[in-house]
Length: 148
Image (cartoon, rainbow, N blue to C red):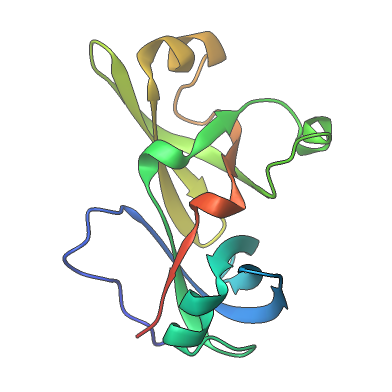
């Protein structure tokens, strides 16, 4: 994958991939992206955005997700059925940096790393620590796409 990171953005999670499918609707489209090593992520993008970026199957893109839009769950992935959240990415906690109110959690996912910013209380209740298995959860409406 030759796509370079988007510099000048505060978005930490920048995952490279290739568009595999686009399903257009009235004003929005769902765009499925095969990520390098992580699996598939779905983004909900305006039709105007898809057209303006020239996105089509085979396009190289970068899926952008703000760290504040990443939720974390513990327990087996199969227990997370029944959620409307499309993107469920399994990983392992690399580090937890907890402040007075918020915690920054780095998660190793296959071939990449994601950062989640959650409340310190949630991190404690989930028992998050280095090596903990987690699932990163991201609504498709919170995934933006960038091209070269």
